[in-house]
Length: 311
Image 1: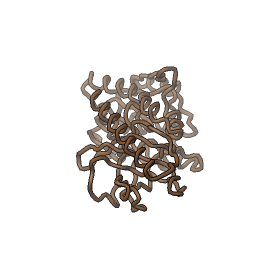
Image 2 (image 1 turned 135 degrees about the vertical axis):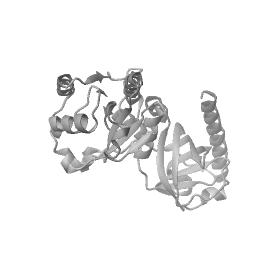
Image 3 (image 1 turned 135 degrees about the horizontal axis):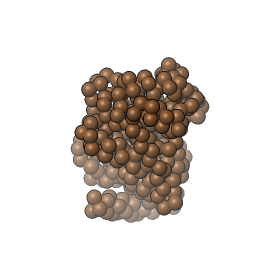
Image 4 (image 1 turned 120 degrees about the vertical axis):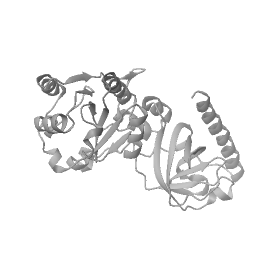
């Protein structure tokens, strides 16, 4: 797969089929759209192209209403590749870009630059200044210029609409089981490992303390997760929240990697969340805490092994 930052290599993306959107989370709804995109492209042996934006247009239009990201741009591109896209174009969002009318966007981006054979979009796709370009407008443009247009209906899972905003609310509430189900893949949190109090090391459960997060931090709780370091995947128990047993009430994200030893300070650590296993709570004694931590490790191991067994 090719990842381009702007229109820098036309041979990779022209004369193909295109989906345009933010693709934050690359969830089941996006995956349904990508499957249709890839089928179109493969049937004609041309590129399947995803065009996304960085930063999110809202960051320029309404900076006080920026939704926290579900995916970093690097992970978003990785997921788009995983679901079959041949070329990802990350288009810088500039004030000039935001002033383009719907007609300008279609003719400048879709026809002149991408030279697309067709588009695959969801029903709530809007484009151009003030979101004036609706699906109806897009259909008219495509018909007039002999482009195909596939509109993929909303995806419903067990009566729940799959959308980035719904998933964001679930993650904030700590419901990683439902979040992962709607995402169709683990939820990845990325942060930088910093020095902490090193109390976990004295308890026999050393933790990597994460900070400077690039995306949304799940709600308080203890979670089963995994992390891949130098190509090897490790099971992980993640504690998000305070440490009330020791009278510490600052919010922390602490990751204990099972069977790992090494120095991670200053590195970026990606943690793939699978399931919430319990609340954060105080314990009457250090021994009670240690007993719970051992039980947590057993549960984490079981969840990760179950995931491995199901593929």
